[in-house]
Image 1: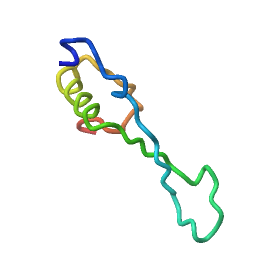
Image 2 (image 1 turned 135 degrees about the vertical axis):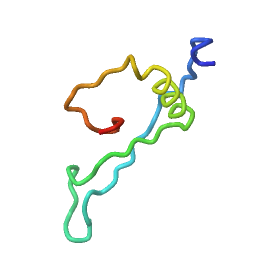
Image 3 (image 1 turned 180 degrees about the vertical axis):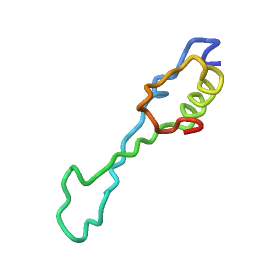
Amino acid sequence: MFILFEYLPRGFGLNYTVPIPKCDSRSRSLTVDDFKGISISPVISNIFEMAVLDRYSDYFQTPDNQFGLKKNI
């Protein structure tokens, strides 16, 4: 329906980032470098992204040095 009507809700692409500590914080004070961010997105936008990728993946290309979340790698 998104493609048919060429419309996406305003909040469709919004997400928020949750900081997750990389190490044990009990041994020392934490700095910004001690956290990694996990992005939380709406479920419907993830489903839409997976559907688009499934249907049009032959048209998408990524650099050879990109290994994360690639099929058969």
